[in-house]
Image (cartoon, rainbow, N blue to C red; front, side):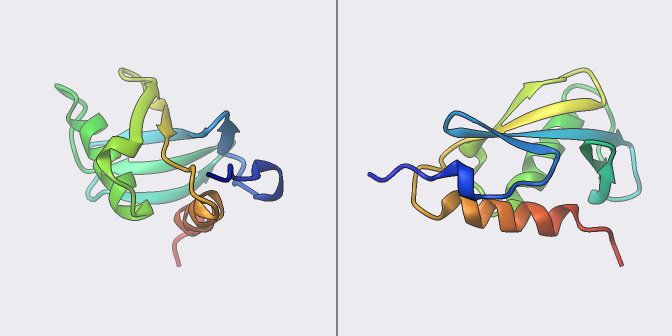
Length: 116
């Protein structure tokens, strides 16, 4: 199986390649009116979460939202850091197919675009 060439794929500043994974640096705002990407926040992507920050509800909502928005399976996303913090890192796996990283980069760019 051909490995993706990470050197030719441009990721947003808040996403970086780490081996066969992509790590997303996020800033979350739990308890918001609705769950949505709010756009860049320094070197992170800010995501508003409708879920409250109790009993892991906000973390679960974050992973569900990212899976839906990026067309990924739940098993492809894992919270890598920041379980009890607003600053989080999410690891995306399963990018071994040729072109998968390029497609993810396109979806990430759309996710991080400022709302109209």
